[in-house]
Each structure stands twice: as C-alpha cells, then as structure tokens.
Length: 343
Image (cartoon, helix red, strand yellow):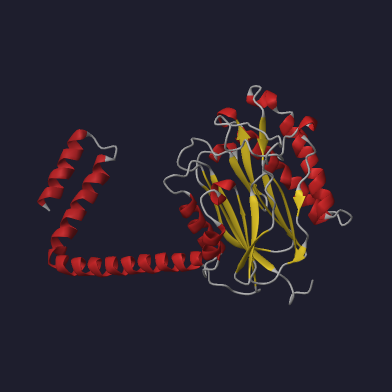
C-alpha cells in the first residue's frame, strides 16, 4: 500500500471493575498490551496513539463462579500475541486461518485449566477486530460486540450467541442468569456444540471510520442510539472511551465495563484531546512559575535593607561550623567562638 493510500489507526482502550464487583473478569488486547493479574482490580487505560500495519484489538468477558472468569479472559488475551506474530510475519497465513487456529488452541487451554481455579470451570466471550493492509476482519463468540461507525451510521458487525427457546446455554456465574444465555464461548466442550466464531465479511477501511469493541457491560447500559450520539462527536478515541465508560458505569451498573475505540485517520499531524489537555497543563505550570518568580523578586527587593545583617549572620555561622568540625581542643574552640562573636 502506497504512503498516499495508507490508513493510519489511532485507538484507545479502557476497562474498569465497575460499581459492584471486586475483580475485573474482563480483559482487553490492545496491540500487545492487556490486563495482567497485577492490575486486575484497578482501572486500566491505554491512551490514544497512531498505529500502522497490523492492528489487533479485542475484548474478552470472563465467566466463572467466585470471580474465576479472569483466568479465562487472561489466557485468551495472552495467546493473542502468537496470533499477531503469525499475521504480521507469515505471508502464507490468512487472518481467518490464524484466528481459527488461535481459537481452537485457546478453547482447549481454557477448558483444561480447572487445576488453576480449584476445579471451577471458566469460560470467556471474545470480540476481535483485526485491521491488516487496510482491511477490517471481525470475529466474535458470545455477546461481546464490534461496531462500525461510518457516514453517521452505526452498524453492528458481530452476532450475539445467546440462547433462544429450546436451545442449551451455559451458566457459569453465581447468579446463573446474566451469562446463562451464552451459547458459544471460549472454553466449550464437545457436548456443548462446536466452538466456532461468527465471521463478518472483510471490508476495506475508509478514512473516518470508527470502530467500537466492547463487552456487554457497555451494551447492557447503552442502546445503539446512545452509542451513535457518542461516536458522532468530534473527539479522539480516548475522548470516546472516557464518555462511553462514564455512561456505562451508571448507578445501576453491576458488571465490569470494557471499551476500545479505533479510528482510521488521514496521515499527518492531528491535534487530539490529550494534546490539548497537556498544553493547558503546561500553560498553567508556566503561569504559576511566572507568578512565583515575580513574588520572589518583590520579596527580595523588600528585604535588601537587611542585607548587611544577613551577611554578618551568615559569616558567623560559617565560621562556627568550620571550627566545630575541626580537630581543635575544647579550649581552642571556645577561644575561636569568643573571637568570632566579638568581631
């Protein structure tokens, strides 16, 4: 792809425990970064940047009793590094081939990790966006979603795998209701059906396209009209994730919340919300420094009439310090101090 036709992607990701849980069972994958056990209970954010070539973004929503779903979502996020390497460096592998191989391997790893969770079964949903050579590839299992915002229209690119009447579903959480409707997920066994993702038809990314990858912590709180209004605003991706997270974590929200926003932009210099905030902060600091300088100068001028006394006192204490730190006897020291006081 020539430089003139190259698509630049800038993106931001945020994930939060939410209002009612102690642990974050969501995970996000952001071009190699994801939530680790060290920061599983803290808000997670990656600020906007510009990325080219292969971009991989994903959201995982872990499921399991006693907050063990974080094990499944962590495995799924960790294993995406190998997928990124295959797509980036193996010209004979298509994104479809790499994703299916990744999902089969990850499905088995999550299914077999009960020894890590004290015998508790875990699972995870997945919403995956790959932007490669200007093409968008979208995959999902479960009810985590990917949206495209283009020409003021919001389009859902994923398909929810939820139970309908007479269809079996999984129940892995303590409440047994929220995720009791999921029919496809990472961690399935053969008795529950075939684990295969929904695959959207690949398409060319246009400059100005915005993508939202999110867990159901977002879509259970915001309808598509509200998401459309948010993405229609002239904000950078981090501005969008800030607003989506704030709206999703309303008083009645009881789930973890995760969102990634990626935007295709024109090459070149772009003023972002973060840059404006940094500039304002620098101006405030510069103003404070200037005020401090003027105040210090005024105080210094006022105290100039006492300059002689200050010099006298300073000289006195300099001499005392020099004597007290020497090898003189006590008598010599007393004589020196007396002499200093007289002079």
